[in-house]
Image (cartoon, rainbow, N blue to C red; front, side):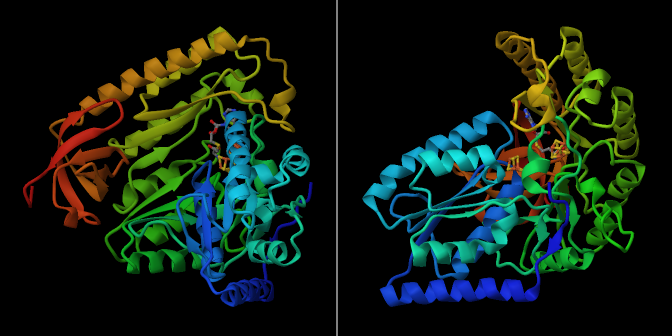
Length: 471
Ligand code: SAH
Ligand code: SF4
Ligand code: F3S
């Protein structure tokens, strides 16, 4: 595996902008504006990457559409985290043979986390001849060049070499939304949890410079953004690869002191690197949302060791206890894997008891899915599928009851919420902890922070009404 991170130079980027100009000129000759459709799978990291892909396409003269039918370019930005995610992509990719038959000049690209895997590339080469270009996350910055080559040579392009990864500042960006924004602060992951494909497809950890991140945040706030979510697979190790000694808490504190009315969120925190300094910083600055996504994965220390998570049950619980001691109103969410190879019934019960002890506001529950090339994929796994499904259902039931009861506890409280949209004639809003609230009100309120009195609750969301001004 290649381990050297590269920084993309200004000359390299200028060359990409030149490809955009050439593509644009090509369409001008043809006398029409081309259209593009970008479909995103997976996590926020991919959402953020899709904004860059759209930025490049816009720079090359493309207008965005919201379906593949009739689009001149289709980009599938894929996720490899579980087998199910990959199956969905292959299914939808198969369906694109029909859209291409109706529009033979359509160019189809596959990128994102699936594109870095040899097994996937081999399958695409052999069985999906209608895919014109494939590029891994490391080659995203070269998309203009790849598109240009496809358009001018008609040959399939594969940009998939194994790399440690790069940092490209200054790529064009076309954001989906104005009110909320993703800001990547780092890329890649060094943790190699034994079940996880991410370190193989996203390369080594590399942090963006603090100044570049602050500049992006300032611009976002000036353009009306009210909620910034800082992104990284493991935000707590931000800065370890930078020369200036700045860590994630320092970065958070600096962003939190920028002027303006906005809220900062971040994900994901790895319990291994999260600690007192982070929680004290969160408690200190009102612009940092008191919300923490702290994946625990398993309640059993034996399983955590087999997962290579570098913390045990007691250490995890101590972290949560400290976080809550400095932020009693902290909203806590987490990820958990059910059915890791060799997980016994007792070990599973330890997971259930951890959930009951911590009482998360919400939990993302996953059934273990073996990923080719990861250590866990070749571990012995004697537990039958039906048994794993039973554990999964039991866990969901326990959690649903907890979420429901926590939500019920909100009723009667007044909370400051960001009104972020409309849905079926109602306003939607988010509490500081990220809980969804539906309420009546004028559409003109979208984009403002308001006090909302919570009047009702379900397992997944809340209802409310606008509180009197000054309430
Ligand atoms: N970087 C983040 C997680 C990214 S993946 C972190 O470390 O917390 C999101 C979640 O998917 C993980 O937290 C894990 O719960 C789940 N996941 C990852 N690989 C998986 C696999 N092979 N099978 C099932 N769930 C998996
Ligand atoms: Fe995957 Fe672990 Fe890295 Fe998260 S920290 S991306 S689970 S290897
Ligand atoms: Fe999926 Fe890649 Fe994210 S594998 S979860 S899109 S980092």
